[in-house]
Image 1 (cartoon, helix red, strand yellow):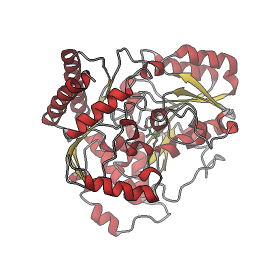
Image 2: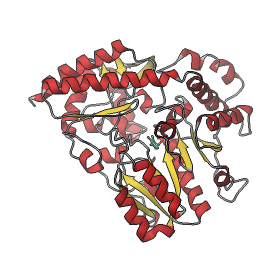
Image 3: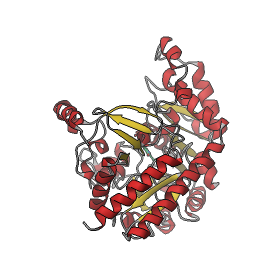
Image 4: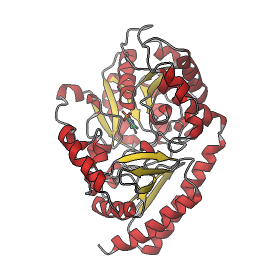
Length: 431
Ligand SMILES: *Cc1c(COP(=O)(O)O)cnc(C)c1O
């Protein structure tokens, strides 16, 4: 595989951008090779600057549920752009977008658009604190909610990969109100509530953990969080930045039948443009400025181009609910195929799946808790990644991420991925 052009751009980029990338996981640090630079994507495939073709299982980390440059989604973009890309004034598409989100989500009655998942969670937490007039929040180790200060405590995703428990630059004062509990361990939550229940504004949780690899909620976990927050008058925040519009048209809350007070969106909601949103009950959302006292704003929030592409993406999902059956079918196909190969090759690995979300861990299962995730052989994942990419299969360059499947991935693509997996696992087995 010739990647000389990617290498050349990487070297130049490193002069001007920290690590040559604008988000750390893109540097491929945890798999030990230089990153590839992408030139274009269509359907399930991306092409790098050297012209190599890959079946893409990153899908921009989730937004591209219809694959790259979907013709239907992009059909009127030229017209929209000609009218201007931002006014800093309200537009009708923002109302249409908000209405559509409230129709699709089981619990969101009002919604505010922002520009990223990070902004959504940060704002939702401020709102929960403003509404309850309490300071403390609970998050779970291994769950990632973006990079705002109060959430960068023993966090997952990039920081997990790089083994930084807490980022320098985040003050103790900022994180002292963030309490960390164990995912899938209700007792750890109950204990904290028993001690500090009247100080806790909110629990924020990924209803399916997707940033320590995919770790589904164990039976009763989400329901338990719902009950305990109700009991203590705290807000339950579902961070549905990955699960929203992916697990089902109504996200994880529709999939599992447990609703939150506030919900955060990102990724799919922008269809590949920088969009996030947070929403929930009217009573809480009416605390947000300019109606209420909780301040939150954004120069580019709800900008018409992003709203247009986001709206088209969500509408297409709403109008084609059967896509979720089809996506889940593909995820099951991969799960079964991977399990068969793992058995056949005789390698220590575990496949976790929640609906359409899945990942393969290099360790014995079951994997339900963060400490079990931490037992994975990340070096082995690095070797696996290298074998796979040399066979035209682009996986996440980190053990702690999911395998993303889009509408554009056909059974043929999945079979190619499974063939590459069989070859790769056979090679790395003896290393
Ligand atoms: C990606 C992600 C975020 C952060 O979103 P950005 O758009 O990258 O800021 C927050 N929460 C979850 C669950 C995510 O997966």
